[in-house]
Image (cartoon, rainbow, N blue to C red):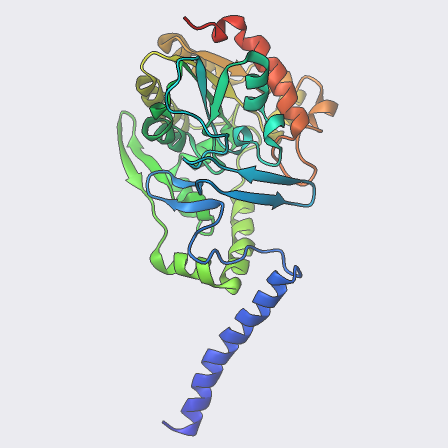
Length: 350
């Protein structure tokens, strides 16, 4: 090997290594706020679950710290952010399904909606909600995990601002740098839908687990992608027929799996939904559409959009200052409205 060839090889190997070392020092010293390599995927949030796509590590703890909150998270033996629950019980219990809003992103467990309901009713609320979940994943976690625990009712949170995207495989393919796009999907046109597992390529997972540079680039490109593909102002009002038909098909599967158990769907507004309703306070087409399904299946729908948007000034304080998710005030207001809307009969079990 000639000297010039050796120099070229040294440069080709040395420059990436230098970048990797430099980015590693910047991340570990706090100069650069990007994710650390996961070194084998043993973090609290695991993006390669064989059934759900993403799930918590069982019996795990972490401290989530942002510019505006610092919250301790823990999981039980099945990976749910909840206390340890017995699989069998002769007392009434409720299974709670949803995404980050019902998981309680950025709030302590006693302050989140499901815990407030449990404390007020005396009925255990088994929380199986998970950040980054779409409605199809929530159905799968119910079918394959939550249904193994004795329960009498189901609460499902639906966030149109994210669920329509998270249920859409075509949309996921456009979000090339969004890690949690790798998930199970229902694809096709209702009623001819089929299960598809969209998985992360091996090379990409290896880089995400071991490279500081890759994770820094991933954050930059992901943010650009999410800004470019931002949802419409309010998906309570603007959604495609394909989106709502897919959502209905998933809900029908969940209703069938629940085998006649009492069920309530909670429609959860995001910031854009609250602003839209505050400007034009008219009934939204999504809740009207879903009420037809609810009547057929004898389930309840609680639409939190009018309740949370009633006072715009107050509504502007429902999110964390640095984050779109509910803060503890929003969880409290949602709890108060949900308990009134469900009424005492929802929690009266034979």
